[in-house]
Length: 124
Image (cartoon, rainbow, N blue to C red; front, side, top):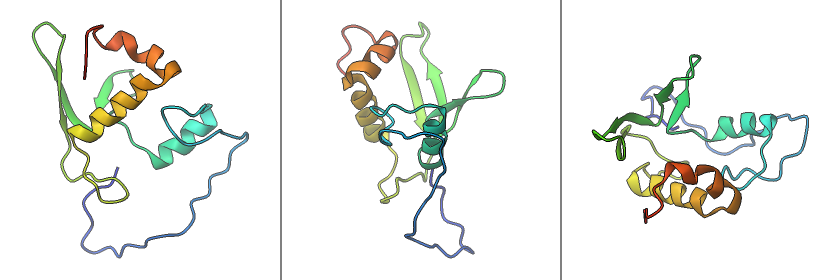
């Protein structure tokens, strides 16, 4: 997550991020990489999620500001936090969320795991 800049802070770009692990990971793609607990911890230092589970296993908005269901709980409206950008300055928006959902759905293994959350006739 990138928050709006602090006016008093000087930005420093570049450098190397080093993270110690007890085992190798096969990449950092959150959709297709095999990430054990250590890899997930490393990914959490780089990526952010739309929601997280709190200590009581309640889903709490994170990059999203809110999730609102319709009356039948078949459609959810997600409001994204404003001012969040990717590392290259591209804003987090609905299109970016859709691209990531579709990437997960398109992965053979991850797609199977998340398909129960999508209607069979969904063409998102």
